[in-house]
Structure formats: structure tokens, C-alpha cells
Amino acid sequence: MEKLLEVEDLTKTFTLGSVLSRVKITAVDDISFYIKPAEIFALAGESGCGKTTTARIIMGFDHASAGTIIHGGKKEAKNEKVWFTEGIQAIFQDPFGTFNPLREVERYFFETIQNYKLAKSKQEAVARIDDKLRLVGLTYEDLAGKYPSEFSGGQLQRISIARALLTDPKLIIADEPVSMVDASLRMSIVNLFKKLRDELGVSVLYITHDLATAYYVCDRIAIMFRGDIVEMGTVEQVLMTPKHPYTQLLRASIPEADTAR
Image 1 (tube, rainbow, N blue to C red):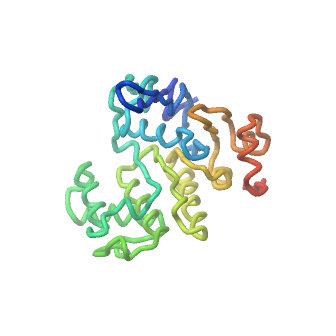
Image 2 (image 1 turned 120 degrees about the horizontal axis):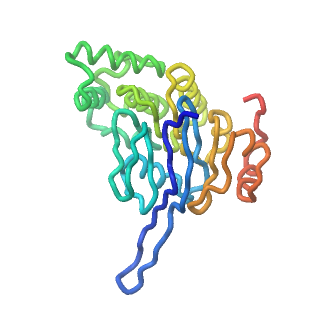
């Protein structure tokens, strides 16, 4: 079985307090999982369970205390900064916080193209930007010369997805991508992830506390509780017949799942 990303025995501890009264907090406790090509995999749990810390380590924003991450056959050693290349891109929770309100949105696209040397001319760059925006239901003309305040939260999140697609990534890390989007627009965002998986073969690490959207969009899911993965499997296995008491508690808090998916 081919694996796009492997996380092995990952641990992250934080030290809090003064010199005389230091306390170690384990945010991620020896977890392991993998993501296959063209798969949407969820890390789910309540706030503080360690799912976002795990994502930050994969993206290279934090160091692991122990464990390894393997991507594309490359293993990153413990305490070594994890690479963040065109092969992995991220989408964050707050679409408004992603963009500086005083900068035109298109500038972020041109900067990404320049940083990764994705085009040899402005015409080629505009064509690439337009191509990626069309994948999320927009065009270059929709954002040219406009500022973040001229878009809704749902539109900005779709723009964030298009920007992430500029580098043709194999994996997108989506950290609570619909939690700050209007409820009426959430399904349009999660349906985009399905489209990217099915049409482009892109994998998604879907970080969420929302089991309803996880059930709808994901292939497999891992439930995190106090830094540990307590249950993992297909979404049908884990959410329709949960085994761990914590998963059962989470499952009881959401409406009856639509078995049709």
C-alpha cells in the first residue's frame, strides 16, 4: 500500500512555569498514522486534544520532541525542522486572518508564483492563477484589484484553497477550514476537498472538531483525546460503531449521520 505521508511515534511536550516550578505538558503523546494518495484523512477531537499541534509539526511550524515524519520517502529526524515545500500546502481556520486587509488579494498569488518560480511572465502567471481559481468556482477577474474586505468568508476560504493549489501540492493540510465560515456555505467548501481528491488526486489532512463534516467528506478518521489517538479507521467504522468511550461521547453529541454520504 502506497503512503503519501507517515507519522511515526510523534510526541510533543511543552515546559511551563518558572525555573523552580516547571511543569511538562504533553500535547501529543506517541501517535502514529498515515495518509494515502488521493485520500481525505481527519484528525478530529475537541479543542486542546493535540490535533492542531500535530499539524503544526508536519508543516514545520513546531519541532517534535520525538518521532519521525516521512513524506515522499524522505524521513525527517527528531528535532529537525520539517520541510514545507510545494508538495505540502496549508489552509487555515480564519480566512480573514490569512490576508492583510491593506493588500490586494492577487498579490499573494503573484508572490507564491515568484517564490516557487512557477511562471516566466506575468501573462503565464495570470493564466496559472485563473486556472486554479476556476477549480474553486472563481476567476482571476473576480479578485483582480480587490481587497479582502470585498469578499465573504466563504469566498476568501475558496481563494485560500486556490492559492494553495498554485504549487500542485500532493497534500493539503486544512486546519478547521469551515469553522469560521457561515453555516450555509460550509458544504460548498468541503465539497471542494472531495473534488480535489477525485479529480486531481490531492490528499487532505482535515483537522476538525466537527464530526458531521468529517463523516461527510473524509475517507478515514483518527479521534484524538488528550494528545493520544484513541480510535482510528474508516469514517463508517469509527462514527457509526464507535468503540472508545470518548468517541461514543462525541458521536452522541451530533445529529444522526446520513448513511448515504
